[in-house]
Image (cartoon, rainbow, N blue to C red; front, side):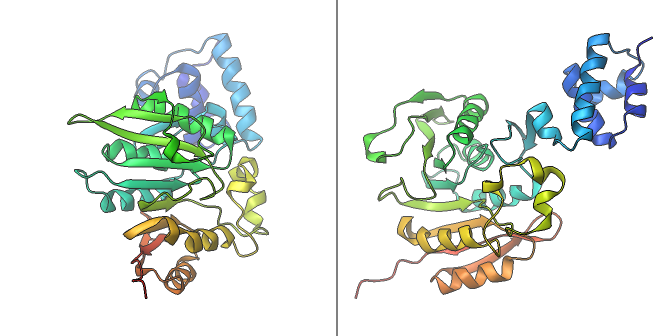
Length: 305
């Protein structure tokens, strides 16, 4: 006799939230369906698949990689082990970006280390007049990001302009927006700013690696399965942040903003680095848990002597 939805959820030796996520994936339904149809029996094939997914989760594999998706900023993103799993705390970076981008103006936005594209695509979705450029040093990550953009923004591939410079991977997307015209999200293979030539942006955002190389958390939980290059940021976790702060002024327009995510205990040090580099209006922003997770500042171009 096959077990029912209610029985399967009650006996799965997983956290309830994980068990529901896996069963939703197996059945292709939402949470409301699971609640209403607790007596529905699973077929043999459904039971076998659910048991296999439970075994993978019991071995530590992240649910997001098992089901191949994770929700971020009310959008569902495809994820694979080639990209970091989008996290709720990163939504603070998107919220800050949306505050800095006027809905009715064309502004240039750069997303460094885009991964799945969750930050860049969320910004493009809510600010369709913005010209968003998303870069990553991983071709596999860029493929995932482009796929997410095509699905979530409804764009079509086109050849990027030669003015973009060398390193552009040919994955620009032209996306429709209200009021006519086009809004762009473009993807480029680049190690931070290396392939951006003389481009200028009104806003640069980043979720760089910021975990210390020897942090024990790298060997625990979901982090064990995520790409280490996207997590570890040197001895104190700040190597990539230092590099971004040092280089960003060359790519910011006068009055442009830099904002980036960092670790729970790094806000004060990040503000010091920003101020020392000449940024003004330096700030830190807390996430929903009250932890300072995003810092940044405005770049005021120095007058020529």
